[in-house]
Image (cartoon, rainbow, N blue to C red; front, top):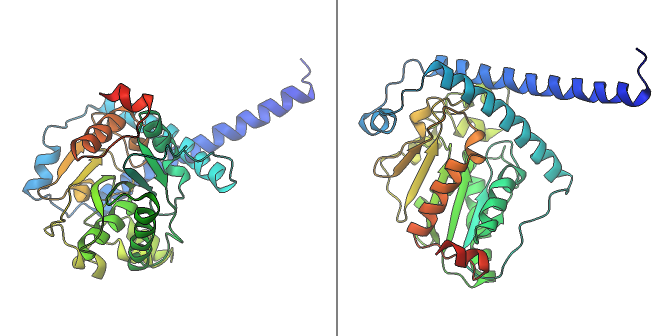
Length: 304
């Protein structure tokens, strides 16, 4: 059977998509294996062990989680690319309610948080997408940048406090801001897959010279030692993590003593928590629990 030009183009496009997803799957699976190997000598403390003690996924569940993580990671990377090209519309600002600042992680732009922000906006919240100047810079410089942008946002909106929903390194930066600025203005921080105690995977980034932030994210780095997990912030911090992490090594690095930790029921990795309904529900509950006010819209009325 002869193929016309349209059929050939479709087959070529399909082949590229399959190759793209397979490459992402290889990287995700490799990340899980390498992360486990690098963290093989680490043992969880009592608070870390308690967070994961009830999670005992079967191999079939782990396989499903790995497939979901691969598909979501591929979708997430596409969103970041579209955001870079200015093809994603910003969430509509309703002009009222507590601002919910959305912070991306290492090598990410705000496109990684776009889908989550879109979901929060539909539920009546007021998400604000924020990009760092560079995720390769020293973490201290991004901490200073975040403080400046939050002051500007508070002045512009007239809101004394803001909430933060952050992914990965974004959560580490937000916590450091809360611990260093007495007037941090953060009502609550919800961190998704944030390695507060560092991640051994950052050693690979440091080896490939992927910015000074890679060095800062290594366990026992100068930055990590300045903000040990025992330091308590003056506002609530919550953490969401999957139990099959491919970036945070060990996965219990996301656990902070005295802070809420929610482990997703599906064993996923680093990106999937940004797109799972279980994450949305947990974040929404924490936002409302900590006093975040939705916008005065019909969507907000539906929440009550």
